[in-house]
Image 1 (cartoon, rainbow, N blue to C red):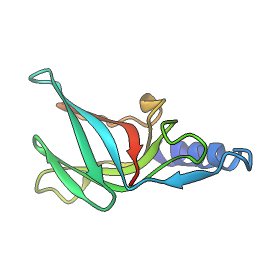
Image 2 (image 1 turned 120 degrees about the vertical axis):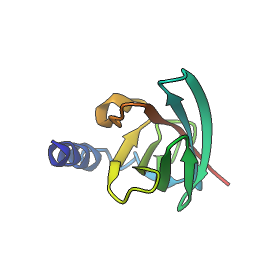
Image 3 (image 1 turned 180 degrees about the vertical axis):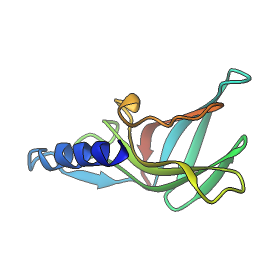
Length: 119
């Protein structure tokens, strides 16, 4: 399933017109939700950084956005792990305007990308 989704995202990215160039941000603004307590928190993370949110660790590899619209549709490559576990519960691209397209499936936490940050 993940391979099919990755292929679909790759095909969609390759179908973008040439004028839809992207830029890389310095980090990302994300939102996390603890489903048990109902508390939502804003998370700001830099590229290459790992942050802890409750019992999960979120790592951001890269955040990209449309070159002509820095506040536009961001997409970020993130890895989410249970604290202390080697195997990720989520690893892949998450798209700000369509978080359900490649959503993280976790019993307690939800995490989604809001926008990229720039210098």
